[in-house]
Image 1 (cartoon, rainbow, N blue to C red):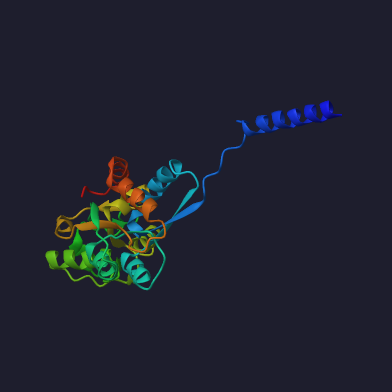
Image 2: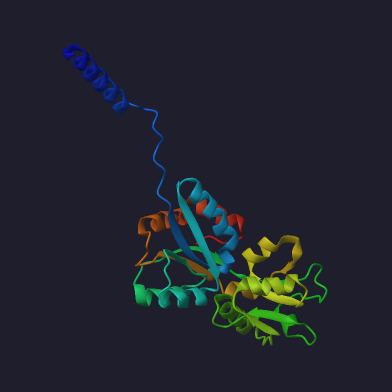
Length: 253
């Protein structure tokens, strides 16, 4: 009996040893995390491409992009909305956020306005002066939105007073109305005209150089995912980010 007990104990120890050295165990899954990025509507195409790049190299990370007018995003952040990264289409709205959060920001791109019309330019718009012409229906961004503020600057530079049929809350809304044929012309960023492709006709004008928007980006002070947020900002500022932005029609910082 003693011999049998000893044999059983030895067998148990052998099995335990085998279990401890099992190398076929399933690897641990990456902990799911969400990175929330508030970005100007004009960044939709570029940041959507960067979202895919970032997720491909960060297992378990879901980048949640919130696109809107920069003024609306700044208001949401100052009202306490939870976000990790803020990318604005102008420095003014970034400063509103910095006044509360004191986060350093880096300029990563530039952009300027262009006139867009429905395909073929049926109203024969050739410059800013034509936007003030009788019978031409124009849509612009609202003045508090960066593209609206830029529109006011180029109007002053050209000595033109445009009376828009509507003032939209972000640049994509202006583009949507022109694409739908609800307006003869609108002022959007070069990057938005690039994204629309053949759906619009783009008309460049010299006064656009008087209102070049600088795009700053920052990690928010109370970012729930501060380390990930910095990695995303680094991606935007790095070679891959510059390539994605250039492809979308943005100018260099």
